[in-house]
Image (cartoon, rainbow, N blue to C red; front, side, top):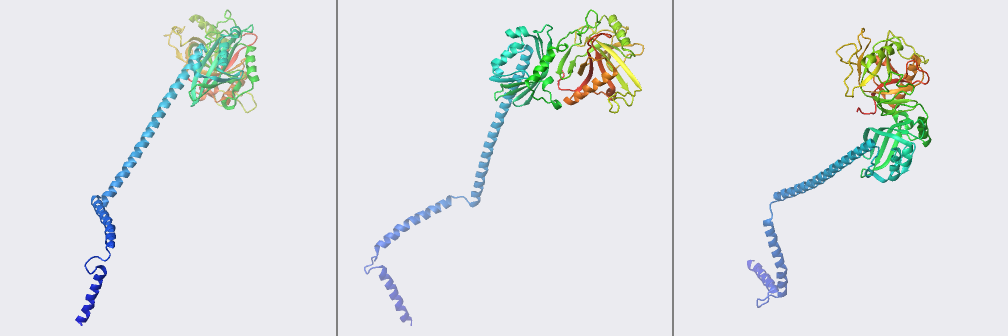
Length: 484
């Protein structure tokens, strides 16, 4: 069996050999060997390259850390770029803010300078060529017309030389309402010379300046307190006829004190027959409707009667006291009545004054000298050490007249010509209080007793005839004008 099975195996080997090889030992199909060799060489070469690359590659964990490092580097680059861009943006914003602040401050200073000189000269660099102007009497466009208007009011044109003089403009405050808006509060006065009595015309109000991107004035709008004041103290535009009526009413009304004058004689009395040296100076801050005004008075030293029963009695004491001091006081005579006790004020809605007072204190004083002057202060004629008491202190009962110091105060004022009776003073006081509430101004109330205080003044002689000038004053706690 071994021999039987061994021969087929030998034969199979021979057959296999004979298939691939020829009897002489050569390959039967040489071209197949060539093709196989040609195909196998690139495969072996490529596999060798892959082995070399595999040898050069780091381990997998190193590749992962490298990728993390690359990602972190990219993030840092992105952060650095964003930080640089934000820093550049902040720097540009800061430089823009500095430029804006400097331009706004330069514009404010120019407005103040032009007001002091009343546009002589006018700085045209802060306006655009087609600047627009509007007020209750005028509306025009163009810097040439703007300059002609201010030159006319300043008396620098042919018409202005015959019509206007003593033109003054005072800026009380300048505020930046927004990035492109400035608001100024001012008082302006001039004398109108075309009428024989040459009346003084006074306007108070605000100006709104609208600016362009280069912080030059695009539009200038004026609003008058006496014309454009609306509910809650807001300003609204009114027709041209309203501004014309307000201007004409000042031309033909009783003369009032100039807004910035330091000496002024009351119209119904002459200096030769009156002990008064003239009206106490003040700055007019607001001229409202129906004779309502807001004034700023400087501090002064006054001769005061601490208590009196009749007005004539206090007048005589103050006149004698002023003669002893060799001083001519300023007008007006200022009277203060303090009501105390429960039930004071207006009664039950019928409109009559009901006063249930346990005591009634009446004072009168005459202003003698402003605290801002360099002259020595007057000394008490009674032979004291010359010290001046404050307005809150009262003289001793033995000395009915003494010196008091009145601090600078802003007053709301209501002017009327009716006699200074109790009913008239109360009616005018409550009219003025209603006006203050309407315009958002708050009276000064030092204590509860101030609720029963009435301050009223008399500009004329004690027993003068004809038109009188009487006023009710209310000190203001909150007002729109900064302390100067």
